[in-house]
Length: 97
Image 1 (tube, rainbow, N blue to C red):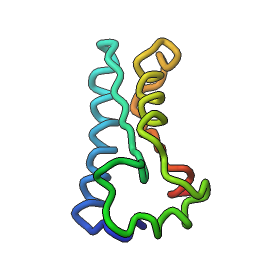
Image 2 (image 1 turned 45 degrees about the vertical axis):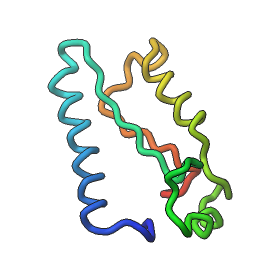
Image 3 (image 1 turned 180 degrees about the vertical axis):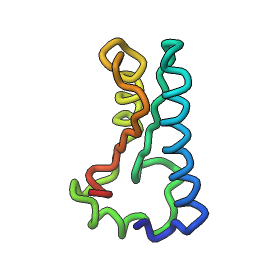
Image 4 (image 1 turned 60 degrees about the vertical axis):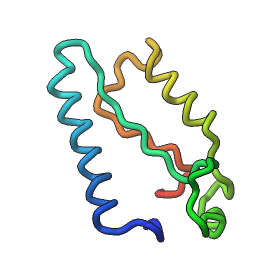
């Protein structure tokens, strides 16, 4: 559980995961793949105050970088992931394991 998240945030995340799967099923027959990226704590300017307290709970004991997220997005745009469809990819250093 994320200390800054509430019921509305959790509901929206669940809806996004479900929408990803439904769109993957609807558009897969057209050759369109739909996947979602679910980043954890990423070192950007929009981090909430107090985020540093979360870092000690992340199994990798650090924040992720925008570059790490971008590299996964890049792979999803290549033939390497041509059979990945309807996936929610968690980039969180094991935070939600």
